[in-house]
Image (cartoon, rainbow, N blue to C red; front, side, top):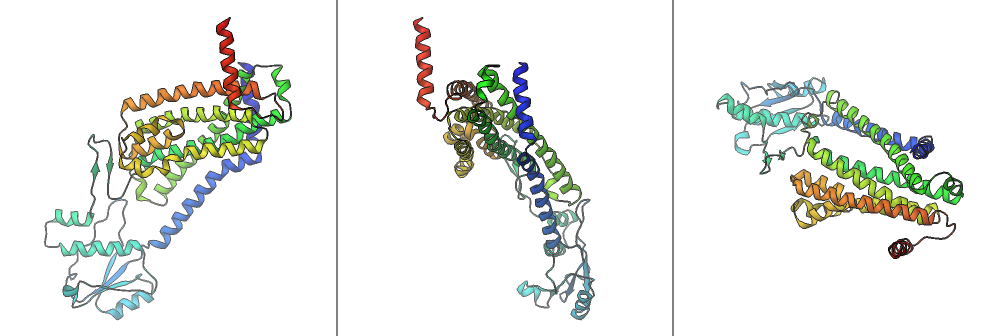
Length: 410
């Protein structure tokens, strides 16, 4: 076992100390920072807390009801002006960002005019719309006025009560399984390069002959798999840490309301993570097997892209999965390691996956893991000492059959 850990430690250090790994590791925090900065810049352009004026020639807003503000919700202040000249002077002085004009014919045509030098923020427009609604309902009980100010919020709930959607869309917690699925796919893409490079490099420089004199192929395979798992675990931990910091910053500094209601569904997260780990192991073992059969490292990179495309198949069938999340297609794709992660993530967004389907999926994945490890071991033993010759799949199976037949005859 110590030799297996030595191989794993060597592979981890070899990949971690590379400049390419550092760039990949820092790329996610970099893009997250750029994304948050873009959101902050967009919000600063779209929203403004400067007061908004209005000129009312109808008397509707003669004794206005101000908009209620929550603890985390700040409304734009509405300032009344007697004349348009006074409102325009306030705009030029920077006291207000714009003003609305309610003409004397407002009750006939329901039209208002917006006057500004620079276009006001979206929040100002929305708040004035709510301001008008509240004052239209001024003669109603206070409960009705508060309900009007709150706007429409239709809740769609599944029959078992475990899935809820509002008019604002899914919560971050409901989207988290999809994010986890995409992270596993990214790890598969990165591990393809590590794994295929690890097996082809030692084969091409012929150091594998020396390695085989000190440890068995099984221990060598185990060490390389553990090495890739260690490298990918470091990436995953870094991404999770950056994600937590990004959520904290977005909630407490940028005041993004969408992140206030996370509604984490930990059973769904655990389901996707469990299936994702097994699916990742299948892909890693198969990439090791394919890496043992190729002649050049460039061929291994092409194989890695094929695996990545297989994992992205559920996005092509996203409409069919969303329309019938418990249909034959969705259930079948939940059982296949290459499509299970994203399929289960998408299904969990609309539907509670039954326990028997999850158990069946895990059982099928375990069988795939065993088969992939066996195939990787066979391919590694037969292919690593063949220089310049491509190992064919039928040779691996044929050699396995002949070995089985000889053992039975004995």
